[in-house]
Amino acid sequence: MSRFLLVSLNIDAILQEPTIHRRRQKLNSMTDGLGLGDAYGVTLDRIKGQGGEKARLGMAALMWISHAERPLKRDELLHTLAIEIGSPDLNSDNILSIGTLLACCQGLVVIDKEISIVRLIHFTLQEYLRAHPQLFGTAHSTIAETCLSYLNSQKVKALSDLQSTPFLEYSSLYWGTHAKRDISDCAKQLALKLFDNYNSHISAKILLEERTRYHYDVNLGELSLFSGLHCASMFGIEEIVAGLIDVEGCDINQSDCDGNTPLLWAAWSGHEGVVKILLGRDDVNPEKGGLFDQTPLCSAAENGHEGVVKILLGRDDVNLEKLDRFGQTPLCHAARNGHEGVVKILLERDDVSSSKPDNQGRTPLSWAIRKGHNGVVALLQPLASTTLCSAPVREVTAPFTPSDYRYNSPHATSTRTTPTPQTRPLRPSPPSSPSRPTSFRISKRCPR
Image (cartoon, rainbow, N blue to C red; front, top):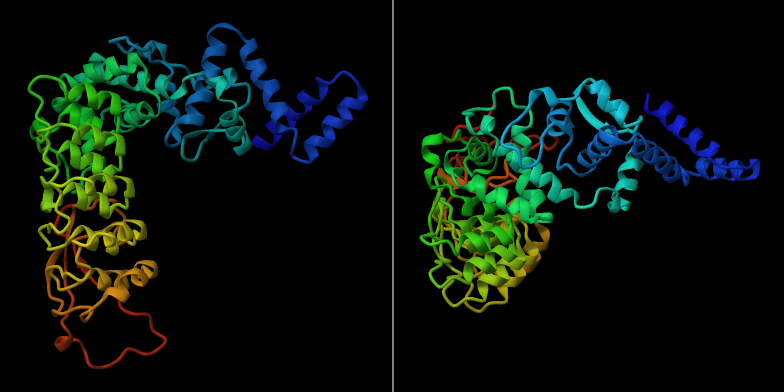
């Protein structure tokens, strides 16, 4: 279907030319793949030419589809376009039919019926729209304002679960991502309004269940410690963080229900600007660990955030060798996850041990070898002074990493059972058979 629409758009663009010669030139450029931009331009002019609400809806739909953080489902987009920024109420009578929306978009938007996803007619249209940002003005701040207006509505505030609210998940998970890219005064006010009762808001539960380091079901009764400052630090919205820490009574070192301080969230997410703002406070504790006693430096090293690591290393009150509950240093975390840049930064310090074993007896080098991070191995191997693993591997509770599992959750746990060398079977495996994968028993309940 999209192919026929593209042909139609091309024909319309060709017929816009006044002479046969110019039409032939336009046709030749389109066969070379160079004329689609003209076809899109003509169609966008047609959308704007509808005038009134149809023109607004057509351009708004294109803005959302081209700037959303993930593909939008049909009902999500329809509900989105019905939201009035700043309004405390959601009017269900304002929701379009899909047929009306497609007509407003003049063929540039199609529906994937199998998965009910709304998408642009062709990937080149996405490139065209991104190359012409003036078409939508401040797209990300508008999207943030829309998401926050939705979350501040009376209907959403009264919710305790997702129920029949198609736009709730997207607005909860991504309003801050759009606000970080471009935030308006209106979005700031709407965010602060959301934070008035954020610890009891359904969107806080959705956000934590998505980003929490355990991936467990969050009980709304446990959310009282998860504040707006935690949320803004997680998203990296510097303007909001700067305003919240100046509020009287703000506890900058408060741990949330997952054990994380605002600084931990900012360091884990790699938000350098927010890290600098939080460290500017005299009462901040950069050594306060979260779940499993991981410090902000550990979290930044584990996730490869070189800029945050450098910022933390510039302080005199940060211990480079502080161990987490599993006996792992920041260098061990960086080596295990293959972050060569962070490993180089840490090794430049004289007060960093390159061979300190963890509770399993594994050194940073042995972790890098086990994970296959050859670049890190090349950095650590010349510094090795002892055997790779000085203690037998035994059953321990150790943190899993994104390379071990499909969850990007550095604080979750697993119980790993590996036989010691004395108990391994003596019979070798056939040369052609693949090595047997290590078995794991997950000690925390994960989503099915």
